[in-house]
Each structure stands twice: as structure tokens, then as C-alpha cells.
Image (cartoon, rainbow, N blue to C red; front, side):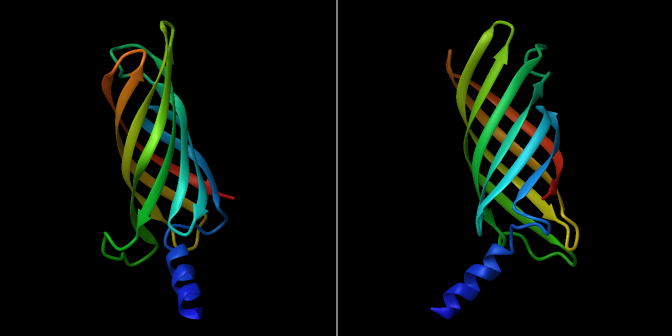
Length: 150
């Protein structure tokens, strides 16, 4: 049983940043806004995003996502300092513009770099979206961001 605890502890350090389990920062891209990460387990988290998507058909749209992601620390070879980790998972999105709003589903995939001794991360993610309400329509999100962990 002890080996299982040691394995979980080692895996848990794969996606946890120094400083705490809650990260808050920004994302630049489509959308641009605030990003938050809440570590929920050794290899998963809830990632939240709220911002403005200005590239969508020339209209400024308020955009919010909530994703449940898994981390795969063995997918990418180790780096000399810190950790570079692949993450992916499903989510939901909400979009609102002057003409109304809608809901959809999203799948996100990204790379996160956790600094070795600092409570920061940087990440790049891509997220295909399928809007479901008010009509079925594909969309796409992409962004580069950073977060500070408390």
C-alpha cells in the first residue's frame, strides 16, 4: 500500500505548481481575458476562462469556458528545469453578444510549463467548440497565457 501512496505523490507533483492549488492569470488570443486553474487531484484540474473573443465574424463576443482536464506528464520528454506537461479534456462554453447568447461543448488540448521554483505557469491551448444553442455551429479557440499560483 505504501508504494501506491508514493506513486500518487510523485504523479501529483507532475501538474502542481509551487505556491498552491489555485492559479489566476490571463490568456491572450481568441478569447483574450482571465484564466484560472483549480487543481482537483494529482493529475487533473478545472480550468476556467472568461474574456472577449473579437475575431468571431467581426463581432465582439463575451466568452466563458469551464474545462475538466487531465495531465499526461509522460507524453513529453522531461525538460532540464521545471515541467512541460500535455493536458486535454472536455468542457462547456457560453458566448454572449448583443444579438443574444448560446451554449456549447468544447474539447481543449494544450501544453503547460510549470517553473521549477516559482509559483507561475505558462500555457498554450487549442479548443475546438461545437455551439449547440441557439444553433449547431463549429467554432475554435486558441490562446497563450500565464498564471500565478496561491
